[in-house]
Length: 154
Image (cartoon, rainbow, N blue to C red; front, side, top):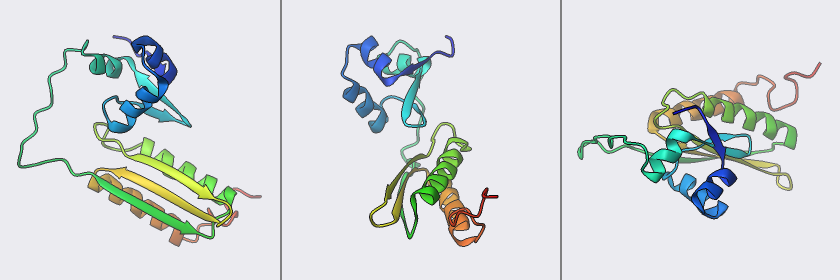
């Protein structure tokens, strides 16, 4: 197997499915995908696992130790578009460099310019989510200039 990567559109065409169906599989966790910017990329091995072509044994999980998933929504008020973009970039970069490749964090950010409000939605394991929340707290409370436009402005 190579390191081939497919777009959602390519996977939909290969499987004879609608693009929305493929995105639904990704959101539901049936199909692993990596988010790069605003697009998903699907590895050949993950596509094979979905279609049953890959002979991968199912992971053995103890009934006593079920995986924990945490859902968190962080609301940040008084954020302009530039600051929201900087914070979103930082959070998404941190999520993509996570330490648990088997259970990656899923992060979405939304900025409401009218209300100068940003929401960060974090889904993932308890430890990784806690680390992300600590990062967000450090950035917001740290006074490092990231959100007020001082960082990188010369």
